[in-house]
Length: 154
Image (cartoon, rainbow, N blue to C red; front, side, top):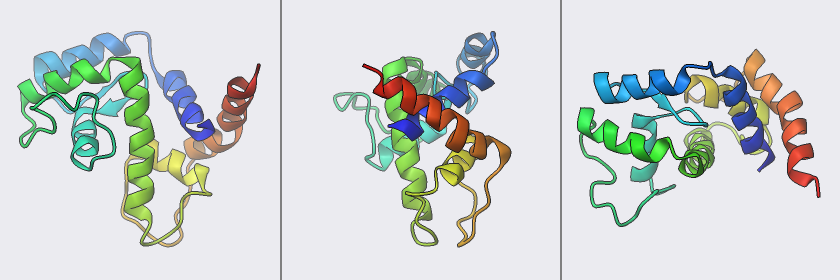
């Protein structure tokens, strides 16, 4: 939970005041694979998470997951991703997806810096000696401590 909190803090810190407007335009008007919501999950990533069985925001929605991600499909996923509750669950599922994808090369469960790096830049090609970037380091140190402090306060 602390790593998830740290990643959410990072995503909020990286956002700009017009983020929601730009997200809506990107998905609704252009139909692009846009990062959406508090966790900044891309619509294609959300669909992949649903297909992997890691999180489904609405198991009763027969359209999920989409076989083809076109403009209407992305608009449909957008309605789930802008809901903060779903966005946070998608973020947790994406973290698990990253760990699962890299597990054949390295155990990331004790490497929040690498998970933070991969969350912000994408999966990348798995390797046995991954390197962190500045953002991943900040997530694992500064934001992790902050999230732990906030989440453990009475």
